[in-house]
Image (tube, rainbow, N blue to C red):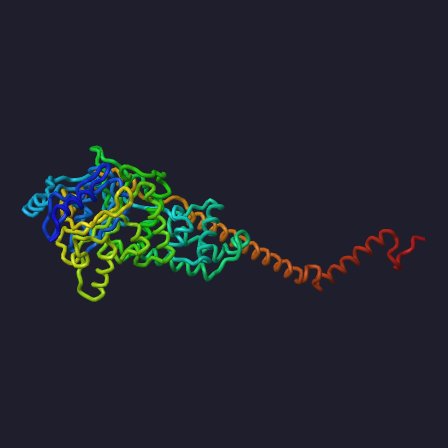
Length: 519
């Protein structure tokens, strides 16, 4: 039996921080909750990123909900990627019941229902403000990594972007990119090669196939105008609470490439736009990616490297990233090592592979004199988790078996009518849900090709007309004229003889003839 007083002292000393903190729950020892051992969450280190993992039904979503509420109360905006569609209830107040009352009493943290300021966003045609980006905003490097291109193919993508920049042809959507790709492989090949070097037809074909694959996962809806401004994710509500932005993405589960495309573009844009902040008292934005395994499911080595780089650097911008997944092994080790806060709900050991995964998970946590971590992971109840995090000095806190506080908002989804009400009050819907179709590379190249085709047709018609005129002249030169006719020639000669004789006769030179003499 562990010493309770020593346990309380260890937890309190390990989870007491300088600066603003929020109580996450109370620690338990030998299955009994000790309300004097409060586990706090320091806002200052929320940009150190984190992981929430556990088997289905163990309480991951509710943990995400609780942390989001606490951040909002502290005037920190939140972005939630809602894959399962069960987070919209944050916009409505929760209801007290016997289970919530019992838990609140056990952990010593009172419960009060509350609804939170919510903005619903969408990557497709779900209700909410539309999230979009243009191809130009991705740039050649990021787009090449999303498509999984090699160096040669990536170089060709860079040529496409350069050609469009030089000729003032905006790349807004994927049809723009495809049109330019087809142009440089056909009508414009000679023009491009004179300016930028040899073009491989094989490379253009490969890139085209990969773009079409991305289109099949719904990317046409995302690559268009107007582009979403990331500053709109970092708004504070009129009552001083941070806005909770919920991206409704229930239709992305079977489209992992689209999922990772959006995620990487958004993080890259945030990194590019946000200034360096250093150590803040609290982050400017915290992002939660639910079902995070979708990000890495079809990611290439180059894409994984890009994700790892962004995660390493973006915390200096005051932005924290949390991955929520069923198994921590879903996250690549290079990324997992960057996650400071770890919330581990129960894992199930049904197979030998499951037991191996549990052992690896336990090895990632600090050694504890109070718990047998590998065994405890399989014994945690719903709403319980093993927790460790980094303190201000970057040192991991003691491992704690925590009974988490319940969410203050509704632990269920909004009705369709309630969703309509939230959308109707949104300022972002009016800003981003208008359709824009600006003149871009597709229209410019199409007009150019039509003009070239019309010019070519006119030239062909003129050449044909010239040929016909020449043929007619040649034919006319070969036909006999009027004066070449034999009958006409005979009549002409007779007439000429008669005229000549008449003239000569009048002059007395008409030749000999008989006449009467006057004498």
